[in-house]
Length: 325
Image (cartoon, rainbow, N blue to C red; front, top):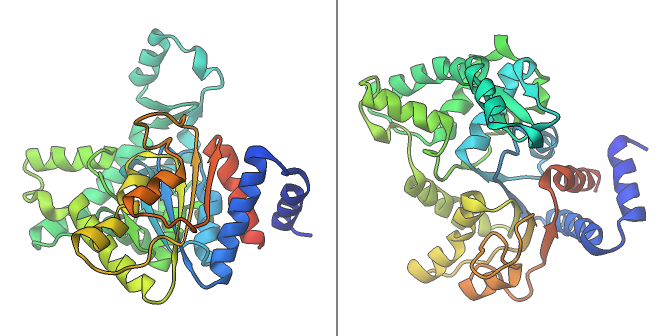
């Protein structure tokens, strides 16, 4: 029995109730969607790339278990930061006990903390900046405009960062996505380190047009086209990690097409969210899936799951189950 089959067997044997059982049922539902010929959209919020979920997401992409991704700008870039600067990351075991002075000391060393992990500014952010700026400027001078991931796909496929790789490249989900030319949607890209760097270069005169890198409205237009085309052949499931714009943005495509464009289109064929957000009044990230029925996103009969837990623990287990199915 291989490792993935062992994990699946363990989950089937031990995960029998409560959130544990929901995890298994959600994974089984994902596998059933694929067996029916449907597609799966994966959304990534938070700092899932820094959590190194790329190890399993890359394999999902290579195996054809994921067909599109919607992620924050942070997850887009942090996979590459990890790819080229992993050896320079620092883990902080006692991160809950850090004082303000200790946090300042990390900043003074150019270490940016994400929970228990510090991303090194010079080796990660500035190294990538030095490369991507050339690609931005070339497009700017040619009067071109492209989505954020287009530039990073080109960098990866050109091998422009290859000499700096510090992890097994098979563990980079962005590299797997680039090689598969996976549809990628990045709303709110401006809220990222590279987004900040891009605007700084525009204000400094190094980039003339802010439209060189497309924003969220362009991403929604691309998403509409992908959803229309894909649903002509198959249903599309929705697997959401965390909340925020990575999940809120793509799920709205269905009511947009149906209610605003007045076109018939299938609803999402499956929905699952891994969330640690408490269900409460006004908390969209913590809303139960049935609330989405009232917004025209899911049908009453759509398979729906919410796993209330830590995504860094739960997601790799779901992924392993799907890969073994």
